[in-house]
Length: 357
Ligand code: G3P
Ligand code: CA
Image 1 (cartoon, protein in one colour):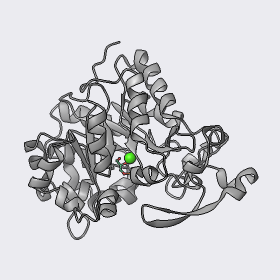
Image 2 (cartoon, rainbow, N blue to C red; image 1 turned 180 degrees about the vertical axis):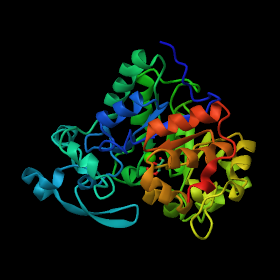
Image 3 (cartoon, protein in one colour; image 1 turned 180 degrees about the horizontal axis):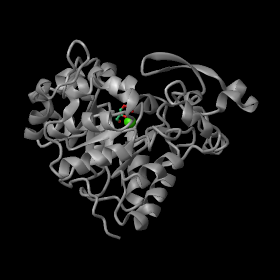
């Protein structure tokens, strides 16, 4: 197999955020398949763990957010209250269910008000395991003629560690057994926490990505009583510290790279030195999350986005590509691929973002 996609390619990478989540209920084999056919380089499964230790793709361990579990009478008594990462939640949680039980569920659209068109697929698709996602990606490689990368995120790693269900060794074993072992394999492993990335760096040579939220601090740091915040981690010194255990960062796009004006408008001239500092430290920069719907776009693109579903996001992406990012998480992968095509063809100068008001 031609593995032209690696984690070290020079062309910016398109990471299909939860699959083609703009078009299908997220984290389903259907959403990942559409993303691959739309030209993404990597598919992104967020991972939680089951009671019997299987890694499954869900954004949250609270299952009623993105599955039909709340409408299944057989599981009604399993609803509970749980504190997750310091927040008390009521619902059904992955760590209380076996994989056999999880497989009885079907995915539903997580943000139906924003994406009502996705709801027509509610109830159609199973909750996939990491192993199934890897099999899917490898299955598409002959059609795409290149490797399809996998970009898993460990969700709530401290919570699962405290529940006696650590994720890291299972994650590494699954990837190694699938043949992803060397530092150049088409894989990135991501986390919002620090301790589990440091642990992963001792378990695998696969590249690691430190996610950075716009506010707050990593949950593991709070548990340890450390004051380290995401803003601390994003300084020049903080980024050098990240480079001790990770190969890249996944920053929230506006807070760290191009902050909008007070009126919410985005301009290239507002770019921070973050990308420069990260590159100085030897870190790749993969910001999140790019979405085409008007409500997610900066104010100077929103009016245009009501008339055109493609160009506003492509133009926003071109601003970030010109700011030097090495890839990005996007809910509409085909628009991400088009932005990269234009960028690589040198058609990204004088981005007409200010003409779209
Ligand atoms: O992993 C990148 C991005 O997805 C982080 O935010 O909450 O969408 O997983 P979230
Ligand atoms: Ca994620």
